[in-house]
Length: 227
Image (cartoon, rainbow, N blue to C red; front, side, top):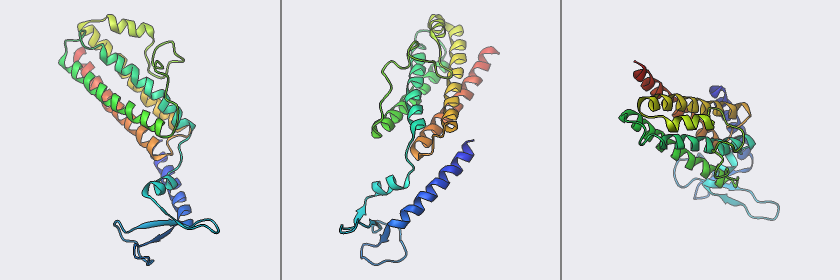
């Protein structure tokens, strides 16, 4: 599915680029038209309306014109994935004082860093597009329907009450399920028609890739504990 999505994005970009070429004139700083050369002399000029002057587009203007816009599926994905990651951070916070395994502690630290970074990127994505951020307690059980892979209150209580090797096994089991839920949410994004905008596509792919790498690590660690 993700491979076909890349083809769709490439096709959209090609169509938009063709449209941009229809109204943009590329010149060199000297004013001569000709072959475009790489470097700071490249300018893109948008002809003005009748009676108005032409306008030189900035790189940011060109990027906005050439990139497909985000849609409701993108926004919903970001607003749901932020609290989903938030619950993973709550789970990693339980490791200290309950696990004596250096491997579990290192794993939890990696998850914490990667998901904090992704939360920041998703919040920036929403803010830059003037979309509302999720409610502060959206990751808390009881605030709306549970998203794929999320723990309910019984799960959270059981994890908080566990200690030692029992906690380690339960933490890994729950976190694997939690990460698999995040991968499912990425798949749902594309199924809903999202991920056409390059930024949302890149963020979703990074989330999916990070979660799947960590799933493999956790399954390996769980297998060692069971041996």
